[in-house]
Each structure stands twice: as structure tokens, then as C-alpha cells.
Image (cartoon, rainbow, N blue to C red; front, top):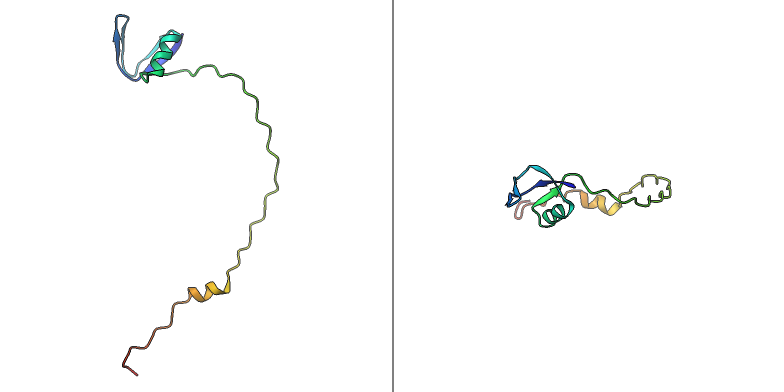
Length: 89
């Protein structure tokens, strides 16, 4: 038996299952309804034992890099000098 929560209305000779309600149904019916998108499992199926992941190799944290500003950027950062208006001296 599996527990499912209905996402749609289901009605038939075996009864009515309403949207949002939880029902216990046999495994085959549960699988059919979930596969069709009409319901979702309430309790996930028992998971198979998985092999644990090996631990990652520890790495030494790198010191923050000291970013240096190129001299060309300093020139680009300065605003251009105002130009004299044409015709005025």
C-alpha cells in the first residue's frame, strides 16, 4: 500500500478521490496515478542504500591576491581637461 495525494479529481466505480486529499491505494494504482500526473506520493519510496561518497582531499586556502592597478588605468580614470571655447582667448 502506498499513500498518495491527489492533484486532480478521480471518480469511477471504485469511488471518488478528491483534489488535495490523501489516500492509501495499492502499489499498482499509486504508480499509475503518479505516472499520469494525477497524484504524487506522500511518503517517498524506500531508497536503496547508496555507496557513501569518498571524502574530498583537503586543500589549503589560498591567500587573497593583491590586485595591482596598472598605471594606464590611472590616466583613463582622470577626467579630460576642459577645452577652451572656440573663438575666445
